[in-house]
Amino acid sequence: MYTKDGESYFIVDGHIHFWDGGEANQRNRYGKGFTACFYDYHRNLSPEEYVWDLEKFGNYPEDGMIADLFDNGYVDKAIFQPTYLTDFYINGFNTTEQDGAVAERHPGKFIVNGSFDPRDGENGLKALEALHERWNLKGVKLYTAEWKGSSRGWKLSSPGAYDYLAKCEELGIRNIHVHKGPTIYPLNRDAFDVQDVDEAASMFPNLRFIVEHVGLPRLEDFCWIATQEPNVYGGLAVAMPFIHTRPRYFAQVIGELLYWLDENRLLFASDYAIWQPKWLVEKFVDFQIPDDMQSEYGVLTPDIKRKILGLNAAALYDLEVPAGVTASPAPTDSGETIGAGPKVPAGQSA
Amino acid sequence: MTSTGHRPTTAVAARGTMDAAVWSALGTVRDPELDEPITDLGFVVAAAVTCGVAHVRLVLPTYFCAPNFAYLMVADAHDAVAAVPGVHTVDLALEDHFASTEINAGVAAGAGFHRSFPGEAESPGGAGAELDELRRTFQRKAHTACLERACRRLVADGWSVEALGGVRLADLSESAERRSLLRRRDDLGLSTEPGDPLLVDDDGVPVPPERLAAHLRFAQAVRVSIEGNSGFCRGLLHTRYPELRDRLADGGPVGEDGAR
Image 1 (cartoon, rainbow over the protein chains, first blue to last red):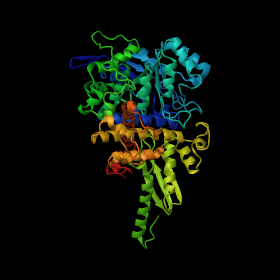
Image 2: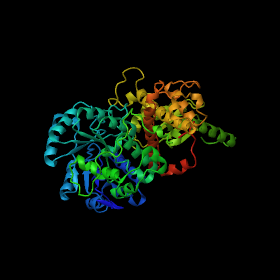
Image 3: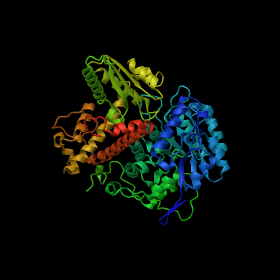
Image 4: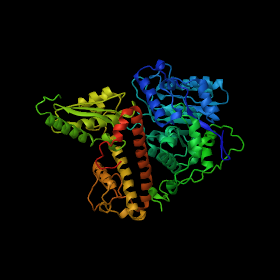
């Protein structure tokens, strides 16, 4: 819980990891490159005092994570989003089992999400059932750019993927977190295209599709599908830290998202340990759209921030929210749908 | 190349001219996704000519940058440098990338993307399929973003939003926005005649008045997206290669249209 200026915020960190990215676990140059890539994200966008050395970044201790999230980071509930990457890391980068073990040592703190990969066929469906049985899954995290042997990834429209989504619906796993990455079959297409999420969201209206990183680097494509599909949500991991290094860009991203979606479909996330919730929460609560952009994007109210920081995720995961932390359920400004004629087209303000 | 000592000044000057010609050629190569010259973005870390052999080294912001865009840049750079008079051999390599080996070998052999990544890319349905469609998709995005900037410029110059549908290319004053827009229209094969309508979609069809506001509003999202990605990529490149930061801060080569 975070309180400032008389306002209280229930904090759900929608995307965290407890990974093993260290040298000993790196299977090959791809694992080394993956950790280095994450580390550059970390170094590039974190305030200086939050930058770790590479060794710690590869393997951070469990007690440190608990402190960073819950003691210092104001987080009430954190959602583990597994990223297996077993072709890159000997024991996997961050599996459901590894996350689950941590969660069981700290009851009430974490939500453990699972994962599936349609390339696993029938066996994978059974494995998903077993995973659900063991961890009582309410969500899965899908990394569509995951390598598997000679395959460089998959799409939600890949053969078999809908069997898995149907299985999720049957099991009551309603939150489908989708993370796009740079390599995917076929390599000649745009790997970040979210068209497949659009189709899946139409096919499975009872599931919620949370597009991680709000589709970045294809913010516009994400906005386009989210406007049309009411069960598409945006996870703000990776977008959040721009609040520090490039606050005006952050304002534009949030402004675009609030325009095309509304504040009921955006979820705060730190992507820990790439970034830490403490400074993200503090800066977000303090943040306001710059004066010269307010005619285009409006302002962020405490209710909008409360929803993004926790209430929206609480609704998706049936979390109990402390009395006193509430926000009007209706969007403050639902934004005009496409074709309705925006009031301030293309930012040509008066 | 080592100077013979007979006419060192001239030799150095000649080499400098050749190097500059190669840099200039590389300045015509754009990152298709970010819509900026690779020289402005800092992706060219070395470019020099020795005895007719152009040695060029490229780097990218991350180890896992999308291989299709990387391939396009390396292939375009290869073609641009090969066309420089006096260059008879191109030694060009992308470094520090997970697919460097495949990309460098494929481009050097003129193999094409499909043959450089066997089994990982779709078979080209017809001659020239390759990455043309991907390139086209991002040329359209670039045009959309440039159109939005041009409209902002027009409004700043006093046009009302409602009147934009009737604006001709000639109405847009000489500016970075105008140069950028004409360049992207040319890329897409759209007309650049002064009397032609400015507010056309990516297929060259004039946007009807009732769709104008919505069209521009989405164009804004496209612009914000491209500009944001560009900023992030620059930041990551500097984090990955801190030594590049100072060089670029000194003012690297300016883009052909002076626009970011």
